[in-house]
Picture 1 (cartoon, rainbow, N blue to C red):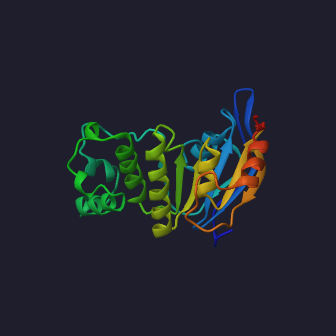
Picture 2: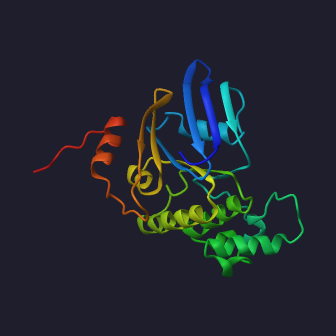
Picture 3: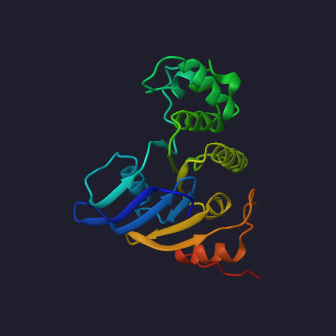
Amino acid sequence: MAGELIVDVAGLHKRFGERAVLSGLDLTIGRGEFVALLGRSGSGKSTLLRILAGLDDRIEGSVGVNGTVSVAFQQPRLLPWRRVWRNVVLGLRDRDGTREVAEQALAEVRLADHAEAWPRTLSGGEAQRVSLARALVREPDLLLLDEPFGALDALTRIAMHRLVEDLWTEHRPGVLLVTHDVDEALALADRVMVLGDGHLVSEHVLDRPRPRRLGDHGEVRESVLADLGVTEYATT
């Protein structure tokens, strides 16, 4: 685990009515650590992310987040009536120099020439890069990524993986990536965790050097798929 703890969750319980979504979940994330969270639909991945983001406090248990938090969702959630640069700095308290701050953030996500563009003119990948710029401009200690590449085509997704890895290397926030994509998790994370029945059922530590290639994780991939209840059958 990297450095001091940014996230320290112990005995977390969350219910929706009679249904228990999270049951005694424990999780830690160190400063600068990249963690991926996998699980079947409805397993509570996004619920956990919302709790860490401070969007849901109706819980039992202990949730500690040390520092500032930013979130990038699956949908970019850009305001169509604001130009790109204004979307990037939306909500920043200090208005001094916000245009310069926005342009610097856009340059980091390789959209320096899109500051004056309207959101409707952006491709899906460009809009998601604006969303990342908006998250990073707050210089978070914890970056929460809620399936941010799920709606992108395969080639754009690979490019986004490389961009996120570059940005993480530069800024070193703690990262929690929620995803359904096993190969994506294995390509990006230091640790891959599987959520099931409301708690973490497995953890896989990845110490292979970066950059990694998609699908280049053989035995670990098979183990993660087994933890998810997926069995691959050989075909003849």
